[in-house]
Amino acid sequence: MQHSILIVDDDPRLTDLVSRYFSEQGFIVRSVQNSHEMDEAISQKKPDCIILDLMLPGEDGLTIVRRMRHAGNWLPIIMLTARGDDNDRVLGLDNGADDYLAKPFNPRELLARVNALIRRRVPENISEETISFGEFVLDLNRRMLFKEEIPVELTNGEYLLLLAMANHPNRPMGREQLMALSSSENQEAFDRSIDVRISRLRKLIEISPGKPRYIQTVWGYGYVFVP
Image (cartoon, rainbow, N blue to C red; front, side, top):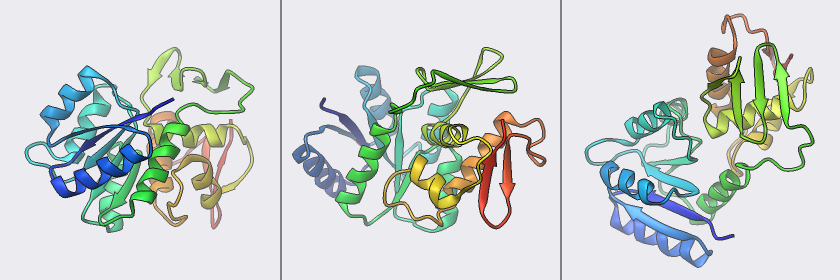
């Protein structure tokens, strides 16, 4: 199956480099320069993954991600930025991006991350169709979380993290293990994205996020899912 990506970046040199590289790898590649062109491109044909620059003319990348997620659009998004500090990375992930890559980057690393997101959109080797806990049901076929039959909005990264923990109930898991099961390849184990996603999941499923019932902290190690 031939996959497609949509590049949203106003840097013609970077766009040309990424487009040529992904085309050589067998991808269908489209590129646009701003949010208006992006919306039009998505309406014509949804890509398998969006590569989104943080700094864009007009509507910036963070605003685009927030708008898409609030509208219920959960296409995988990798955010690119020339600023690579942890605060920017956490801000991008916290607003709904699935992954984050600082410029300059190796195109091979971007390819690995895109492939990882596309591959993980369809979980493999899962025997159960649903996983239930409390008032919640995780539907593995539809890749959705429901609370009393009402959908709970999750990003791709949040869904994969919840799935990883739900498949290992009552088993403490370290950040490296959670990263390996739920994140793109080549993402450092100390990356705060796991903690960011844990925080967002707690806000969605816990009655009291400060005193979590389902996703508990194992101090000095990681987290444990207690259904």
